[in-house]
Amino acid sequence: MRPDSSSDKQLYVCVCSKHNLGQPHQVSKSTWHRHLEAATTEQERERIRSGRALQGHTILLEPDVQEAAGSTAPTVHSDRMSLPPSARPPEPLQPPQLYKTLQPDKPPEPPQQSQPLHPDELLHPDELLHPDELPHPDEPPEPLQPLQQQYEIRQRPDIDIDALAQTTVLPKIQEIMNFILALRNASLDDPIAKLSDDALERLCNPPQGPIVIDSPGVHQSISMYLALEHASQDAYNCIHRATAWNFAGADGIADLLSFYNVEKLISQYTGVESIEHDMCPKFCLAFTGPYEDLDNCPMYPTSRWDQEKLQASNGRSRVAAQKFVTIPLGPQLQSLYRDPENARSMQYLHE
Image (cartoon, rainbow, N blue to C red):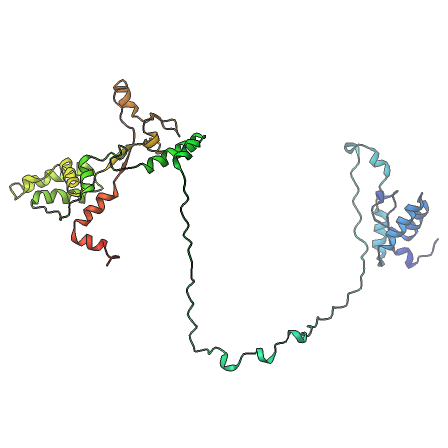
């Protein structure tokens, strides 16, 4: 029998290609020498020696662990790789990690010392602030000076819009140019504005005096109309009938106005009229300007007309399916100027 020595209890790392397909595995010292002699080429012998040298220091194993490792260490045969993957036997379990690499502790790095400043980097005594020049903690900080902004007024470029409109080729650009030309040629008597003759006259020659209402019935009608601004027309008619019934014989009760008449009277007093234009039922656009003569929406395939009324009249009654209402700003400002208090409030910046 071979004497038992501590060197036989050491494990070596072997990387031979015959066993475990060249992967590192633990073997005893005698087995490692046997694998080294069985190597076929000098290159493989150098690889086995390098694998053992890279292992580092090894530790001794307990006898029971050594016996378990020697009895259960698997062997992988190279002929296994010649079989297809479906016919290969399952890979054996790798043995547990039975060695540990021991590395000496690195000494702690010395603390870095700050480098002294160069003499050129030091401040000269003349550059130091005098104690009287230092800010006092009780003194308020100096106010910030407003930024001086300078604006450059550039001359407006001279562009011939007519020549530019004639050179356009794309249909969408042509529509845009038609709107630009319509805005440039806009006027008060433009048919697109749809203002009545009375509204145009009042807009050019607005009345100057305040509105005076003498009749209590007319005053009550205007008050009901303004109070029911967001209510329906039926609500105004119901209050109108209740007022005429409960105050029969009162002064000015005969001057109560219907909903249509009170709207007409307010329009005459203020000169404010609404302008209505046909629009797409899908709220895409209004049929005005270049779109004034279209029957269908150019953006969405929807008819401009109410189909029920159009079919009921066999195409003779063309009523817009949707209306867009515009209230001009000019008559509203003119009516406000007729009241002394409102006129004074509108000139607060002028005063």
